[in-house]
Image (cartoon, rainbow, N blue to C red; front, side, top):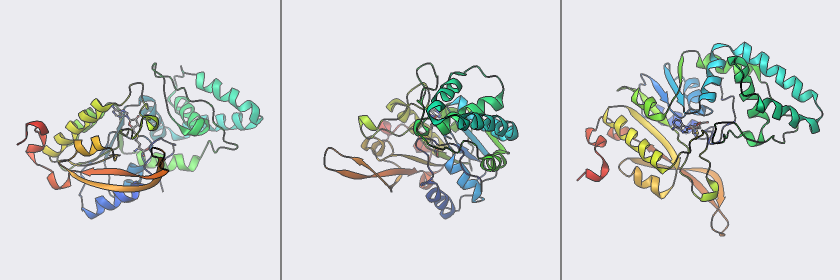
Length: 296
Ligand SMILES: C[S@@+](CC[C@H](N)C(=O)[O-])C[C@H]1O[C@@H](n2cnc3c(N)ncnc32)[C@H](O)[C@@H]1O
């Protein structure tokens, strides 16, 4: 059973079974699967395990993340060895001294070997604060040391299984617009962008050195329209924000209760819904590519 091997903000472990179910229900015969915002890859691994996809093109704007997937795919034993070394050295230290080792590894930014670069990212992911991936404006990972008492840093079996699942995939570091442009009629694209923040304090959109703002959400809607017009099935998740409802008002929208909650303006905790947008009923509709404002 291949599963995600990274902790990733916005990971879709809970949404993945529902997406598998949707794809089954629609009886989509998927020529090729595309996931332009790969992150931890929860949906890719779930669809793969369910036997619903053979051929996959996976991408993310985070080049270090994609290089890690490539190393796990192409040289999993090298990654396991390098990560095992980090794990031994970190856990051998007194807990009060582990932060020093963490920051030493965090500062090693000029590694050349792909297996060591991947092991560094995996090590930082398992030992940093909250498993968050955040970079500063220069693109340097800047999350502080976490507080796990005995973290599992190396899970060799999980990495080997993931490597097998990734064996026949194409992996690219690029912007979602390029990843979407590669999709052909008969393909299926799942889009999971950084969510439109529901409040100023819930904003976490900095996975890469450039922030993902509303102009990017609009660019994404244009890419979604283009997929629709070109005969590509597409499913997108986002927060249930009024601006996102408005952007995708021409498509089928489904609210998915996620059981999480946030503080809402002092009135206690409110459940959060996520939004699933699908173009299934409109695939091949050429008018989708016409900007909404100029439609009758
Ligand atoms: C919500 S996360 C995806 C989470 C993923 N579905 C999972 O289960 O872990 C969003 C991803 O979008 C990526 N990203 C941000 N801006 C991007 C862009 N312009 N093009 C492609 N990917 C981008 C981030 O690096 C991040 O991994």
